[in-house]
Length: 242
Image (tube, rainbow, N blue to C red; front, top):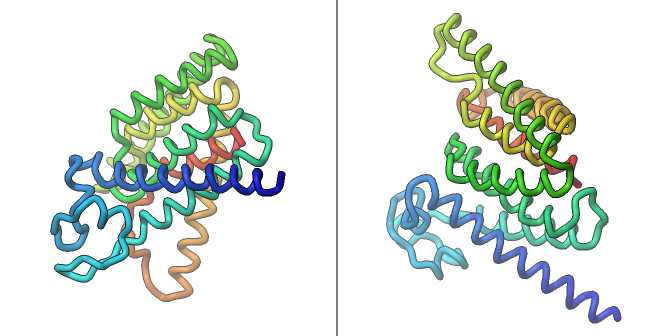
């Protein structure tokens, strides 16, 4: 029994590793095209799929090594084993694909500051199916309307503030409005309110820690003025589903 349990755990961990590699490749390729995933991010030299997957050798042209595929493979392996072994609010069959989807969306928004419409469409379809199956049409549609509506108001206020301060950076992107519609379908009403509040709190806590660390080091944040919001909304939603 013990060997069977360990074998099952290793099987799911291996599946998580493959999923993490796929997420990494999609995060590199979707914003700029499929061949972009194989380019060295520093010098642009094309790599083979084997070199990208294993990443055991640095780029032969510039010596740059990318660790993100390894980090994602380890993360998805651990999350997959965790979700298989621990009871969660949402069943594994629903939650595991959502976990991979959330990771992909978070990585793309963090690195490229964009929420891709194609991924939003996929997420909305999945969210509507999930919401209708588990809660019914009314709760699902109310969640979509509330999530998008509240974020749209915040987006409008942000644009007014941007104009008043004559700033060049948008406080919120319209992709965040559409993302909240997706999360509203997943969480329903009034769960979407909890997702939004916890997302705001997570983003605020991270900002405070980040600014504190930068102040202690005596320099500004290397990431500039942009702090993507989608990863915090996605993390909050995932926590509520778990």
